[in-house]
Amino acid sequence: MIYNDEQLPNDDSIAKMQQGYARKVSILQTEDTAPTPTPVEPNQELGTIASSIDWETNTALLNALARTPNRCMRSFIRGLIPLNEQDSAEISGYYIQNGIRRNPSVINLNTSTFNQTLRDYIRAEAELLDKLVELLYLETDSDRRTSLRNILRRRLDALDTLASFWSSTLFG
Image 1 (cartoon, rainbow, N blue to C red):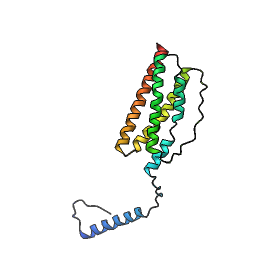
Image 2: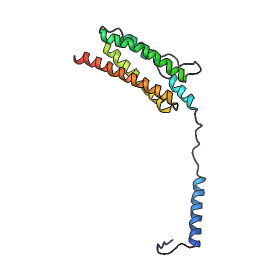
Image 3: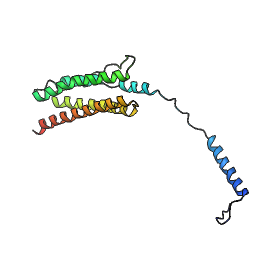
Image 4: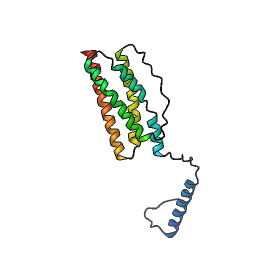
């Protein structure tokens, strides 16, 4: 088809355009499409994420870290243990309705040094923070989002303080 920009559209050209458009739309409407997945109920998904958080490993590693000879560090770490338990209770209270929790994990505390235990704790804490961030992005309730933000900030501040303790033992 030859197009002439100078020529004004007439009824015949408009009808041809409508037919071409209708043909293309019908082809697109009858294309095979992938089946849409059934939507997961948000609370169920949030509950699954919350129940997969490994609070026990963090508590066990904090208890192991609390045996450090450094009195300042020991006091700080002992203060983190009840905060960890409070965060666990709060998250579980929000999302775990049925009382069924995941199986406890096997925690290897046969680390030889404080630094290795601290590295293990930081790894476990990073995994926990990842789950909390996932909950934050999926949560729609503003009060729970605020609570999740506060828990995340508190835990990040604690990691920052632990990192400063660790760096002072390495470089101090």
